[in-house]
Image (cartoon, helix red, strand yellow):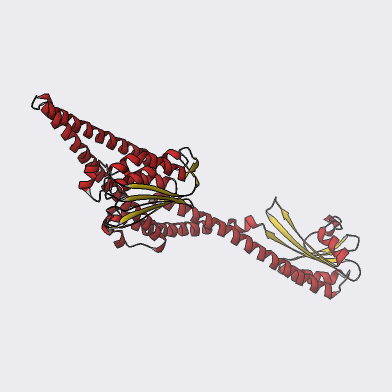
Length: 437
């Protein structure tokens, strides 16, 4: 990463130096061109003011002075014929009426042009003014082309560019180390990220990584705890099954005990099956997201009525009254998951209730509320009841045959449907759980 950052910075620096040199050259040449043309204009205006029309002797006097300034002077009559030139022989010159600066001067009073010669790498600047008698006086200056002007400076420019690149390389190394230092320190100090010296722009990244790190640790602890809980939950009924089976196998039981032990084996086997089914269901929900299952219009109130019909025998066994209220409410959801959610909430409310208690299920405005008059939950346990295998009353859970996974399944179904879960409870008063779809 450090190498790549250095390379990118050096590429940017090289492009910046090249672009700067190019723009400076163009700007300098533009200023130079304006200055040359301004000088020619001044000289030409002075010549025009001298009004030496056709006076070759006077023209020679001015021509001598202009030659010292490396300025060419030409007199042309209105037909384009050259009358005088301080550089070339008049007889060797052709008619100048087609020259751009001459045409402009004859038509508008003044004219200028720039012509380049690729053969000798020269650029000629011209400025012309029309004289009172209809003729034209023109001045010109020959300069090297822009390429030729800067050709001699290339070694100096290259040396300066090289020095700038060296400086940029040193600075880029320093900046790269400064940028990467907090990240490197973070890799070795993830347990105490608040002690890492950083800069403002990196703080959100460090906070995000810290949060992810904490989540990873939390998930690792939860997985470890989950594994330990599974082992414990499986070990207890399996030990019972194995013990009872061993007694029967060795003929150490009479007919009455054999029937009793067989019943215990059957009960524990059912508990194992329920536990395994719940674990598999949780594993399935862990990898399920909204849109990966069939969604349809589900009547939430109808699901409640179906649930009550299934749980009525269990409610009678525990001497608990089930009642439903509300009205028909349609939601977009998976029907099987919704019925599973309602069933687990109601089943939990029945098993953790008191004899003569009630479970009330209310449906209205896309909200499902399950309220009971059960044993309730203390504040310290309230935030943990949706954790896997967490039980408020472990002795009661074992008697009722609960796996400790019902509310964890409820939480997963709520999350993948994008619903909101809320709970209120008081010990020995009861619990109310609501789900807003």
